Amino acid sequence: MRIKIEDIFNKHSGEECIIVGSGHTMNQFDYKNFKGKIIFCGTAILRLQKIIPDYLVSCNNHFPILNIKSHLYFLNQYKKMTWIFSDTGCYNDIWEYNEKDFDDLIPNYLTFDDRHFEQKKCKPEKKCCQFLSLYKNRKTIHEMVAEIFNIKFPSQYHQTISVAELALMFSLLMNFKKIYIQGVDIPSEKYQGKILNKKYYGYENSNADRILDETIKIIRKKYFFYYLSTLNLKPYFFSIFRRLQIIFNKNYSDFKLDLQKSLNTFSWLSSIAKKNKIKIYNLSPLSNLKLVDGIKSISSR
Image 1 (spheres, rainbow, N blue to C red):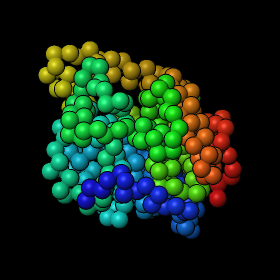
Image 2: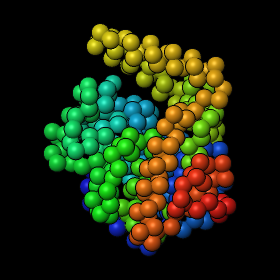
Image 3: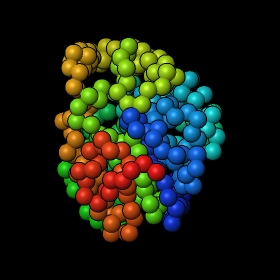
Image 4: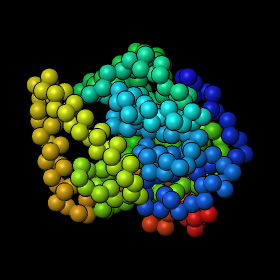
């Protein structure tokens, strides 16, 4: 069932939560004895399947995708979870949005916009711009946080680098009093995401690798025909060149170029937390979140 973003405002006032990324340390936490809410970021849910999250936050066009049957089956195992996802991040190019695709989804879900600031279309225009007419006057999650907490959102922070930024935004909106962050490293080197036939740099899980390998094959095929239909294969060949760079550069990190932008957003969010007497703790010793004022680094619980 679809829920509205207003339904989660102050929903967990006075409670604790943990935001979980896919880094090496994601399993170094006593989830079973944790009394708070568990919020997984993106593919982290694939890597700790024995842990049942309360929320899953995603913002991409590769997982979860309801157009891929195995993803729908996977999500439906978590009947009491709420899936919070960016429809603008999911349906921006290769996938077609159809509300009927959600009829078979068991968990509650909530959609949001992560990119159309001031309701402006992308340049060049993309499929995600359709949501501007579907949901008139809808603000981005960043603008919504800024409005609710009465604090200006710096325009230079518009681009979302890590889905953990979004998870923290929703945690603030739900008004948790203590927010722990585990496995969110945002590393400046040696983070290659998931590459076919290559080991994932984060916490490894064979089932996650199987699902993501299968997904990558589907997506690459979709992108080839997508760019062919637009008579523009330049982005496709660029993606191949990028993959080669990643394969031969062992120190490559998806976050390296935009690390500071991500840390700036976390800094902005931590200032909101401080103003509202909300505590944020980073539990990953190797995480670059230790560079953010307002986020205290402590040992895993």
